[in-house]
Amino acid sequence: MFIKPFKIKSNVRLRNTDRKRLRAQLEAQYPHLSVSQLDVVCPVGRGGELFQLRLLCHGGEAVVAYCLDAEPIFFEQDGGRLIPTLYTLWRLPSLLPYLCTWEAVIERLAGGADFMAPGLAGCSERLSEARPGDAVAIRVAGGSRAAVAVGRLLQSPQALMAEPRAGKAVAVAHVLGDQLWVHGGKRPPPELEGDSDEEDENSQQQPQVCSAFR
Image (cartoon, rainbow, N blue to C red; front, side, top):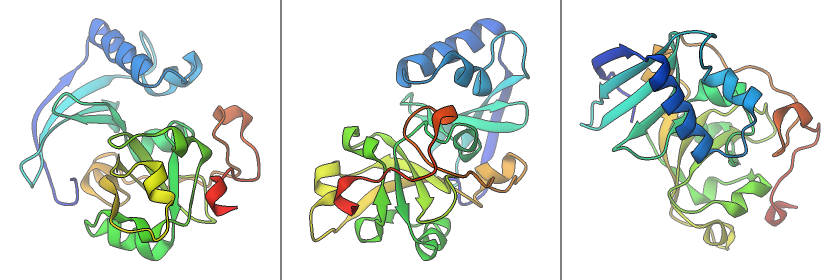
């Protein structure tokens, strides 16, 4: 979606009432987030300026993005679910269930390809709770906890785990190196050690992967 440059149609600073509305939307969509985690990406009162950007993507998609200071934190299309950016996922690695793949596959995603099921190398246990249309993160197998892409799940977890794996698994919306990442200042992925689907502060050193890969 953001592989090619987009046009910024408007850029408006959110008032405190709008910040509270955005935060309430995040609380409803991501009920597992703690108050302190919400404060990291959507502070109310103090803690940075929040902006709403209306974007027109190269493919004609109309997108609303939210930025904390100059860094994109969430985006939505057609009034749908708020999808976290990579910058947000680096701050809150356990926000979304995730899939793992190899670096060679990530290169294809960076070129605009969707994520195909045969490229699946592992996943989090929480993926079993996801449904088609839900947002999921994509990480490099055996690498850092830092996500390198995010998109919408296209298959049920049960279908995705069935052999032989085939078809598109994730419609990739945002990937490392795209123009939304560039808009945030091109910060590189952090080295996040360990892994867990529990709250970030309780993360463990060994990754949790779905039972199909054990």
